[in-house]
Length: 114
Length: 113
Image 1 (cartoon, chains in turn green, purple):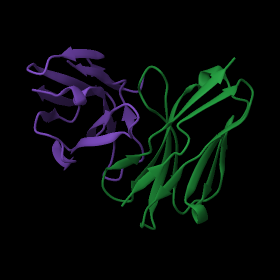
Image 2 (tube, each protein chain N blue to C red):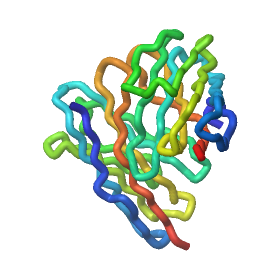
Image 3 (cartoon, chains in turn blue, cyan):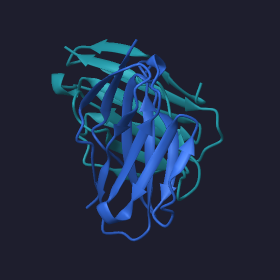
Image 4 (cartoon, helix red, strand yellow):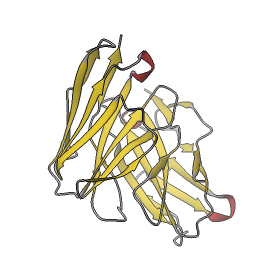
């Protein structure tokens, strides 16, 4: 069975602090894909990153970085120097190498205070 | 703008009403999805249509009836809903049989009284 856990329900930080959102997944597949999505107050989920299971290289995109560790089945997301506009609900998701079912975690609500 | 448009944005209906949610994608994608987002629960996949055929139906009650007349449009027909069906209903689209990512609409916030 596929499962995604985001243990942090809500996080509050002050602007300019760094924050890490945790994601732990379960799958028996050897090939799979991991995603992060951002859901701002407007409602639509916005794609941030996609990672396949064979690529454990960490990625940095501006203030965003992702740490993929297969050994611990984790795919954590760090925002450096957070900004108020980063306030949103962030979802981690898992997808098998076939089919079209994306399995989402429960989400982490991030509040960045000025 | 993600290229996926959902209407209406908000809907309030009684338990005996019949209503429909509409989704339209302008991205040329070949698959469309309905997800349900309830408070404090993960997004739940309801239906997937690929090339206008339903390929997934995650044990959704029959009071929810999807319709995909073409690859750009997706409907969710609602009939005799229950208060626990109140949620944000999100439409998404993707391209390919092994999609790289989903593009979401802004959702319809549904309240069932």
